[in-house]
Length: 349
Ligand SMILES: Nc1ncnc2c1ncn2[C@@H]1O[C@H](COP(=O)(O)OP(=O)(O)OP(=O)(O)O)[C@@H](O)[C@H]1O
Ligand SMILES: [Mg+2]
Image (cartoon, rainbow, N blue to C red; front, side, top):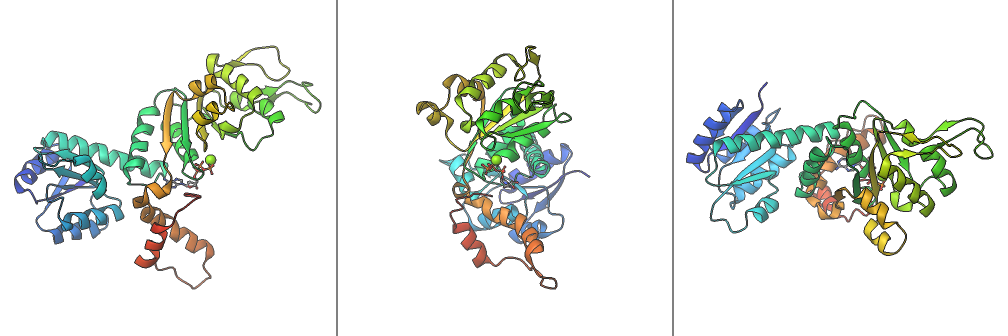
């Protein structure tokens, strides 16, 4: 079924031209002649895949419509007047998923609509929820970074979705059929981390009764996720640096160099740059990890995402916690406001 596009007629001339262009690009289009018609279309099941708001972006009707679209997980493209002094700021305030300046070329509108819809599908595949510009930027980066094998450093407070993003990068990469191996560097004692990462030979140390493969070897062809990399002891940092330089290492107690094809994705809830400045993290390793970079902002800085997350998680929590016979009917606007106003120090944890 072709993707369905709703086009508002605030700017009738643009609406008509865009309708023709978007239809020619293979979409199914509907023109909404009034605000009410647009609202009804958005409330329908399933709602359209994208709504193009052709004008009136400063009016309250547009703001309402865009809120409704966001609540229904519908992508939004706004056409901004040429005279608008701050198009980007306006798009941000309205929570538009995308915007174009007028006069808008119908072919460009169609291409943008396609990109927005694809990003939405990407969110469905990866489970990454969020309409905030910050999350949309992260999604664009994931799309760009997934196909290459360069090392990625992900920074963000605890619970901001670093592991979710690391998995998405792997799942969208050509390595997806190979393993994704996560190592929590903070959870493994320093003395064991080296053998966890690189494996060991039989008899390498007391208790090494058999040869054991390390995580780098297990991840061959795939991705290794070095979580909490900032917690890694200096001695281990040197060894990881060597792997990043030439993709070879020795098992603990081994004499044969082992070569692997592994993509490295690292995450930290500290600022690794600060750790370098404080002398706790090797600067050469920092540069090797920080080839591609993703920052995940805390939830309190992207409050527009909170209602979407609430809507995603409340039915699940209700199922887990409710007594039989007590039906969860939803969340009141007042309760939702309390959640939006909260600080969320643990983010989405
Ligand atoms: N944008 C998001 N959309 C949906 N779920 C999310 C999002 N971000 C995080 N989550 C969920 O929140 C939880 C925490 O995410 P994740 O483990 O990826 O965070 P983290 O940054 O690795 O945290 P920590 O530093 O505590 O390990 C997971 O259950 C994850 O699925
Ligand atoms: Mg994590």
